[in-house]
Length: 317
Image 1 (cartoon, rainbow, N blue to C red):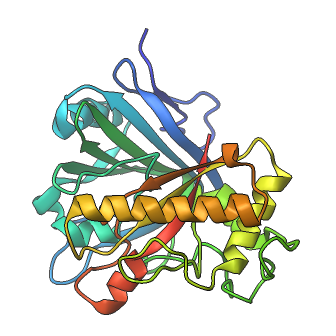
Image 2: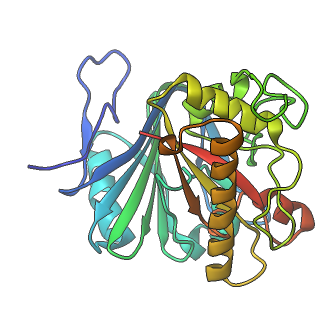
């Protein structure tokens, strides 16, 4: 039996029955979320002359990620999906891979679902975007050892917004969130409201724990971050069924293995703090480290490296 159907991927306005994309057998969905109304920035061309051409499409947005076992490669994985889109009336906008897309600059300009739902190998990925009347879709595939990951972002019954989309990271804990500010402020263990952090976590699937920081090269938590930690703790204690992965990230200074190990130790420190000082059940949390594999900004500037040094909470199914 074939697995991994993306129901309603090609739903046209007014149709009651949706067409679907079919993935290879064994595909496992690792994330699914819907935002209505929402917006997705679809790349319409490669990075060139210091800019990435994007088209922002608004409507009912669905974000999904899939893990596909095997070594089919990104081209082998996306080629049949591209054929299915053509059969459903979509017109390709962009079909490229790595350097042909614009490399690292392109990767920073498009939306990428974070790990653990999706793992992106910076040296082996492929992007495809397409449109049809009232619909748009983008696919991103990356091949890893023994498995590939596929991301689908789709907009149904959408309308193009005026102007180009602005690429960049958004503070996931909401406007004004930070140490001592917003609904989550308070001393460790004190009551707090999850507020904007919970809303962002449920809507987007991940949030940056604003204010959580460490000394250089250390896994010892520095002062700050109580607002975000308190909000996350309140959310988890209020919903015993909820589970999160706490994921550490570093800048690109130093070897990958060392940075992955450091980022994991930092994530483990956050998990311990939440368990010991905020009374969050350990079974609702797990710790992971990504090192510098999932940047949100350029590592060529001090400001970019600072943005990349972060800890995120990822909502698990």
